[in-house]
Each structure stands twice: as structure tokens, then as C-alpha cells.
Length: 441
Image 1 (cartoon, rainbow, N blue to C red):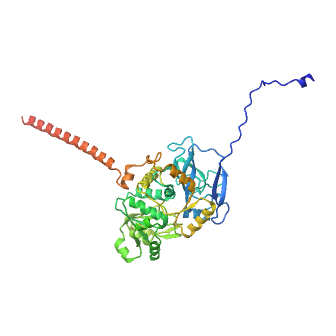
Image 2 (cartoon, one colour):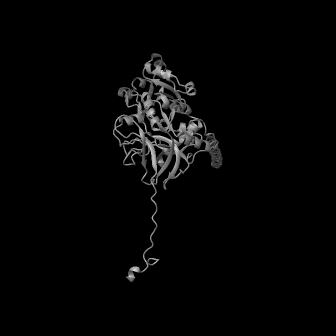
Image 3 (cartoon, helix red, strand yellow):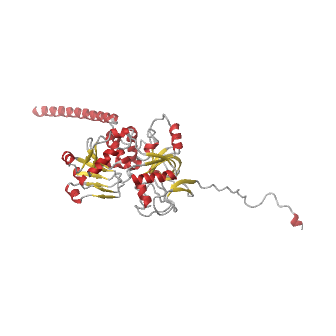
């Protein structure tokens, strides 16, 4: 009884107990997604980020993303089956909120553009950041927050508005990369096949590179349609290139066999390149940089006879993308596209519009965040963090003659080398003359 009434000691002789920490709730991501098989229908969707941020990844608060014909095709199931729910969108612009411990060159607060992969193959890491990292959904850009591998996050120069950066990354970067690899000289002749937002972007990129640009179509009906449609922007329409028809006798007489490259940015249901191939020079290029058309047909005979090369599309490398962004800022490149708030209803409306006009793009934005960032950075100048890395003088020089300092320093070095060579030659002549005098004596 005495033992029962004894008081327990105030201090235990065992190991001290640690106070339990309250569990930190997983952050919830709000998005729009397709959750059921069928047509491209979208609804509000949210999920929790249970896994910690990867060491080589960044987390981005999305300010704007873009939907285009590729998203409509994927949501319809044209690309094949993928894990549902499916969040659409393959490119976005936003501000970094977190970075992994192995990330370099990007810090919280940086505004970046991101490119995502197709989401159809988890092993495809060359066309954008993996969208299959979750085992219950396919991630996409139409979300309030996304996580991407830092390789596919590109610091944006301050001079590029968010609404024009979003939508230019994937197609514009691919166009820039293919034109750069083609090594087309200034004044080379390029035909653009397709219309809408991507065509307008292609025209501005080729103009910045000093290329002669024409729109080329394969039939008279398409020529009339291009002439009537324009790009939807008065300033862009004033600079609209001439539309050439590959089956028009006058256009063939004047332009057949004169083009160095054909740049395909079409998103129509089917594209027949056979009549247009006659416009190319022998050894010309067919560049599928930003083509979303499901089917392309061409004549193997013409490809062989003219020794033409077909170049597939693909995402740009980081150095190429940074070079493209520098040109985008220097030349004030802008996009003609519809802008809506990022909501499920607007996303559905965007898909409907894109089904009717597949060559356009729709910007889904969070305007309050975009405006807040623009006000906070108004008047600031200078490149973004890490933006100068990978941008060569040749990139900017070919697009605007911006490497005068580099050229002058190069000529200075050549001049010094020439002076040294002249002095060495003079000394050699004097030595030979002295030797000849000795022989004569």
C-alpha cells in the first residue's frame, strides 16, 4: 500500500523524450486537367506535392502558360494513351519559389520560362522536362505551380514581357535552333509554310537574322485564305511577307528553284509539301521546326532529284535558347495571341477556339501575378541571372550587328599579328643580304 501511494520521481532515469513535431502539410497544386477518356474536356483539378523537391529541380509559380494545336491533339488522344488526369500545356513563364540543392544559376525570385516534354514517354528527356514524375497524373503547364528539371528552366531577360515570352519558347526556340544549324547566310531565301501565331513569330525571327522571307502555299485557295486572314495585329500585318503559290505559273517562273529553305510551322490537318518542293534549290532544306500538323506528305523522287534534306523538329539546347532570348529582347519580338485568365472555363473555351483555328495560340494567364511582377521590375535593366551564359557574339551579331566591339578587337589582333610578321620578314631579308655579301667577298 505504501508503494502504491509513493509519488513518482520528477526526473526519469531513462533517455529524454523529444517533443513530437507537427506534420507539415504537403503543398496543394491547383490546375485544370482532363480526368476522363473522351474529348478534350477540362475541369478544375488539384493534387498534393508529397515528394520533396529534386536536387536538380526548381519549383515555379506560374504567371502564364500557352495552349496550342498540340494540346488539342494530345487531349483528343491523337498522340496515343497517357496517364489521366492530364494537365495540358508544354510551356510557361513564372517566378522561381524553390530550388534544389544541386541547382546553379537560378535562385528564388528569378523569372524563368520552362519547357515540358510530351508526357508520352518518360524516357524522352530531350524535348522538355519530364511530365511523368507523378504516378497518378501527367503534369502540365496549366497549373498554379509546377516543378521542372533546372535544365529546362531558362532565365528571362527583363526586357521581354511575360505575355510574349510565354508561347515563344517552344516554337521560337526550335525555329531559331534549326535556322542557326542551317548556317544560312544573310539574304538567304526562306519560305514559311503555315499561318497563325507561329508563322508571325517565324517572320520576325527570319527578319532579325537578315533573311529574305516569303509565305509559300501549295494551292490557290490557301493563298487567298492567307491573304484574307493576316496575323490579327495591324502592326504585324503591315510587315506581312508576300504570299507565293507553288501552282501559280507566274510565281513558279519567278521563284522556282530559288529558295534555300522551307520552314514548316503549319498545324493544319494534313500538309502536302510535294508541289512546294519545286521552289527549293538543289541541296535545299525542309525544316519541320514548329509543325503541329498530324500528317505530312512529300515526293521521295523530288527529294532525291534535288538532293533535299528533311530536318525534324526538337527542343532547343540551353545555349541556343539563351541566344534566342537575347535576340527576342534585342528586336522586340512579339506574338499575336488571345489572352484569357487561367481558369477551367477559359481553358475549355481556348480548346474550342483552337479546334476551329489550329494555327493560333491562346495565352492563359494569372494577370494579377503578372501585373505585380511587372510593376515591381518596371524600369529595371540588364540581363537575367545566367542569361549571358551560352550567348555568343555570333548569335547577336547575325541578328543585328551587335558585335562591333568583338570585330574591332579581332581586327586589332590581326593588325598586330601582321605588324609582327612584317618586322620578321624585314629581319629575314636583312639577314639574307648580309649572308650574300659574305659569299660574294
